[in-house]
Figure 1 (cartoon, rainbow, N blue to C red):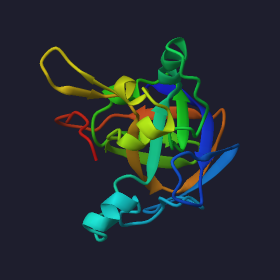
Figure 2: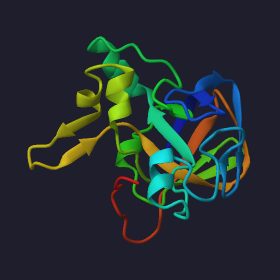
Figure 3: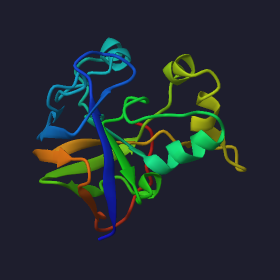
Figure 4: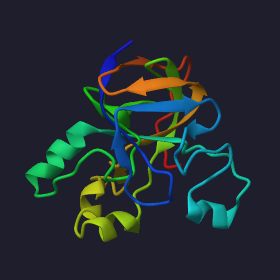
Length: 180
C-alpha cells in the first residue's frame, strides 16, 4: 500500500464553485461530505440533476493533488485549498494514475475512486486561462484531464489535515480512470 497525506480539506453548504477550507471533514457512507452541497446518494451537481436527477452520485468526494497547485503557481495561478471545488487536497500521491475502484483509506474513512473530474467552463470563469492548464491534448490526440479525481464514501469517518492516505489497489484487471 502506498501513502500520501492530506494537506487541506474544504466543504461548502451551497452550490458555489469554490469551497471553504476547514480542519476536519465528516464523511457519511453512501452520501459524501457532511454539510456539503454535493452530498447525496443521487447526483447533486446542478448540471447533472437537470439531465437526470436519479443518476447515482459518483462525485461525492473530490480530491486534487497539491503538486498540481505547485505547477500552476509557476505559471502565475496561485490557488488555495477549496478554490477548485475540491474537498480533499493531497500531497505525495499520484491521484490521476490510480485505477477505477481504488480504495483510499483516510483517517477512519474509506473512499472508492470512481473516476476523473471533467474540467468545465466554470474553471475559466473562476480564473481566465486556467482551463487550458486543466485539460491538455496528448500526442495521440486524446485529452488529459488534470483536475483531480472523484469518489464515493464506502466507510464513513472523520478526515483531518495531516492524515495519511493509504492506497488499496483493486484486484484483477485495473481499469484506467474515465470522466464521471
